[in-house]
Length: 80
Image (cartoon, rainbow, N blue to C red):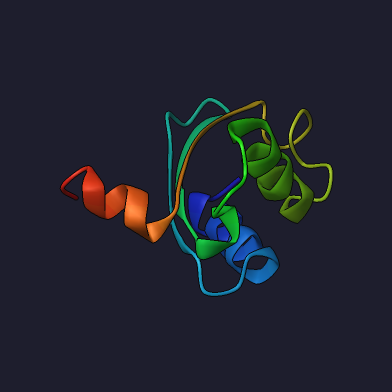
């Protein structure tokens, strides 16, 4: 699956988010998602929100997905 397709699905489900997805070409993906939706949410809940946008693709078309989820403020504090 094309990483750009995954980015579009996440952005559609989490409007106004910044998304970058990379792949090793073997079904393993890494996504960086920055969204104010994550404010006040724990890591597990953030991941659940992202998985919901992918409508069951994780485990089928997407073999593995590593997530890095931040609020805009958290990312800014990291110096990015």
